[in-house]
Image (cartoon, rainbow, N blue to C red; front, side, top):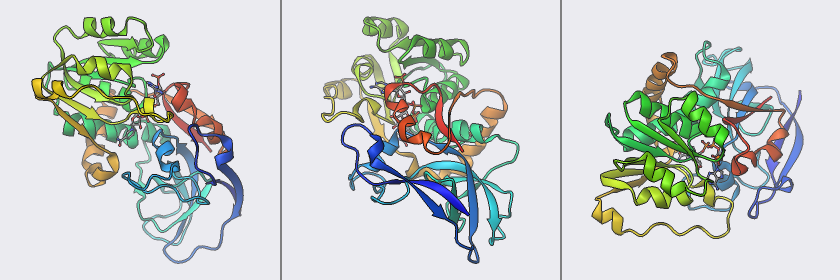
Length: 330
Ligand SMILES: NC(=O)c1ccc[n+]([C@@H]2O[C@H](COP(=O)([O-])OP(=O)(O)OC[C@H]3O[C@@H](n4cnc5c(N)ncnc54)[C@H](OP(=O)(O)O)[C@@H]3O)[C@@H](O)[C@H]2O)c1
């Protein structure tokens, strides 16, 4: 059977341009013992892909080799199988790549419960929810009554962070790039306050929303919010550094705040990446499923149609054009 896949053939310069990809037609070979054929139904697009496309070998995961199918996670159905652990019809998630079909030996695939829709898997139970949980709960150690600020709050990770924090009894402030996104955070997700970080009086608004200072800052973006919140951290505050998307498409990284406040306020600042914590996925999934089933984790999926929509669509992440978890429906 013939199918389409997209290979990375060039490293992006500053922005991701269509010429870094090549769409190819591939053909499946007969399966060997232990193998299964996956038909991908939902493919995740994530900001981290920009880093995976670069030549950087010093990061937490090796770059995608030129000529390889672009790396991505997704949800798929087993359509042929010579592996008794994965019979035909099993739904799985895993690193499947920018491809309509993929052959696997089952390694790294997670079986999915049939009652949870694929969209909810990608929006809640996969990377966004796991990242939010690991960062907020395991690193941030939140306590009821504390104040949390999360940047990139209307995004897939940020919206989960804010909702888990609300479920844990925190006072939650989010920043996002449009008034519409802010309204969604306050009206639908129950954030105590959402602030458009493009506002001219951003510092004044953030001060007004955090009269008792900030105990936990969950950093998804960098940019001006970082500097303002850094100056409002309370003693023994925790800063969880999850992402710096404001710096992903620039050739000059922005300067960070001065370190003096780390001593004055005895701050803990910790970066993390989810791939270091795959061993905790079953326990975290159980917690996230419980929140989800209790209606405490709402989500928005931003769905593109067809494999090749990924080529231009990935840039929505860097313009803020995505409203919710960005994914391709195949
Ligand atoms: N450490 C980890 O393991 C891990 C795992 C997953 C994700 N992440 C990181 O978490 C962050 C959020 O990822 P996500 O998957 O949830 O994406 P997302 O938030 O759903 O989408 C990206 C959002 O970033 C915002 N953005 C883009 N450029 C910006 C800028 N210059 N300044 C401020 N905001 C900007 C846009 O929203 P606005 O409209 O609000 O600007 C955009 O919608 C990223 O930094 C990502 O790299 C880290």
